[in-house]
Length: 316
Picture 1 (spheres, helix red, strand yellow):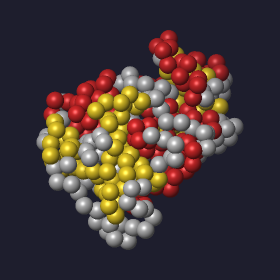
Picture 2 (cartoon, rainbow, N blue to C red):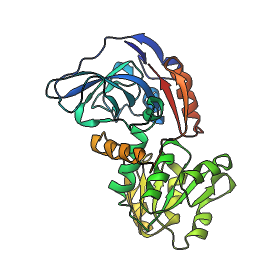
Picture 3 (tube, rainbow, N blue to C red):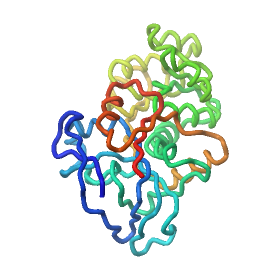
């Protein structure tokens, strides 16, 4: 099968095309013929070796954790799918090696779900990681409910694009940070307020809207942004980061709680997201489509950090 691989950690030039054996579906697994694969910041972080201590890995390594395609084969004891079904999946496995920048991937059946009925493969491929990350951060970790307020950093990014919609759909009051060029885009997603992060400190801007602070901060940036975000929270509020592990003693000093979320595969949540898309409650992020052969350039663009929505690789 065609794939884009790395044989060792390094820059984007380490990513190159290769012909590899097609994987086979073991018991309880689904073989997916990939037609489109999402590009995420975690992909280039893995390529650079930044996450080598966090995840066991083997070379040659195929990056990519987002897949949309059709069922090519079923392992024994898989009864919920048929060959040809349109499916999507977040394909993180215990060992990082067989990713989605390729024509085929195998995944545990319980973590695979039917795609939204009216979505094309490219838009579907943009959803699994960002949809599950947003769901697990906002609802599983932060416990966001109707009537609460939430600050979502980088509202125009892949994760921010979905987090804004999920929070708004849940009945929360949504503040998102974004550059001036993305203000209209983020507003259209449902943000009640958009704070221009290029215009100065976001904390006074948020406090002007919510004098006591917001209930939840969804930190997708880390670093100084995370540290400053504590001052945007109300007492007993909650900060959830997907970038840097919060220091609990620092959070405690502000009278808030904090947690780190690294997204896990979840077929049930993918089915809920599909139902929401089919109902018109949310939509995938904006996408830019590139061929699989351009994976290195796609990762370079992702690494620059100013992509609106998601980059998607067209595979099939």
